[in-house]
Length: 249
Image (tube, rainbow, N blue to C red; front, side):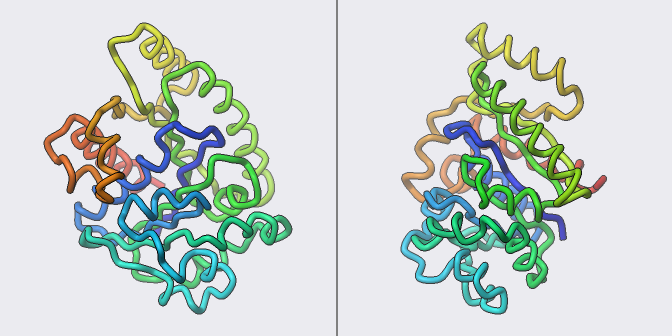
């Protein structure tokens, strides 16, 4: 079982969109996948049609023995969800002195090939729990300059975690999202990212795509909502590339 954290302290970079659609395509490939919605905003939960769950990640963190009753199946075969519930908003305070809470929860789970964790857009206690528990990180990066500045800060945090809380933590890769190849800015940012991070950057690039933007309002991942769209093709390629890297961990 591999635990993959999706992290970026900057909001609006396509992190949750990537979490939902990557999880869906990994499940569609025949793997048993669990998606944990660690973001109190609960966008991954609503994006998979599970808003309103009474039990979820907060309750499972409090008592890992209850994890099985907190997990919800989704409409996608092979994909389960540990949803965000309203109480998760207060978990940041409770977990400030307990960076191993998520690790304990994950240690109680069985039966999954992959666990994906959608972290909140911050470097607070919830995200620190993700960094402490994950085997590897996938970092979505919007093709703009401010996103590049945030990435430098995130990498510094990852290095600190590798030096203490989680020495086994790896960066699986950086994926460019919301990419508009018609603009010089996007192309310049891609060039800079590939020059600086080299092979860490996935070759799969997620384009700006209307269908990707519409899918959450229908509570469906892109492979169920618009499987022939360019966004769907991009996430399928990313899922294949992710698995090829995961198998080398």
